[in-house]
Image 1: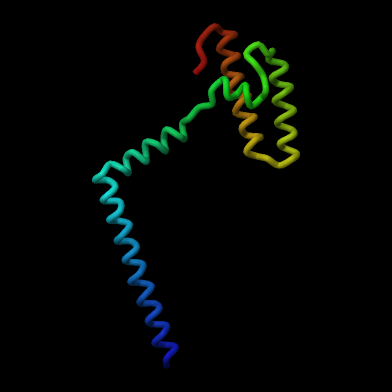
Image 2: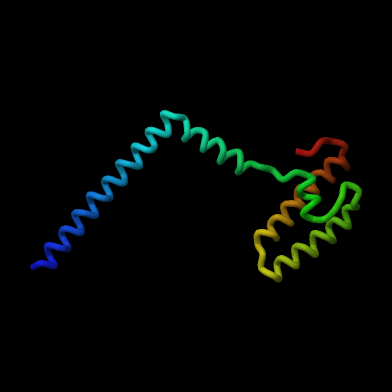
Length: 117
């Protein structure tokens, strides 16, 4: 009998606690929207997500300069990409890949005489 009462108290207490958490969350969202915090957070998140790798950052990752021929860039890319594939660093491997893509767009733009995207 006591275990049944204890179980009911736990279930009721959990329900009350859940409702209180939901109400507090709603109030926090309301306060944030009044202060403009929510909009600012969304804008910062979008800015961070759309950050594009610069040519200088890509050169540093691959260890090349502006004067490095494209064939040498590809050799360095292949070496770094394969090393990171073997040693299991997916993050570094993706950075190397993004660096090559970035430099590729700059080299294509130079060859066509236009500015990169």
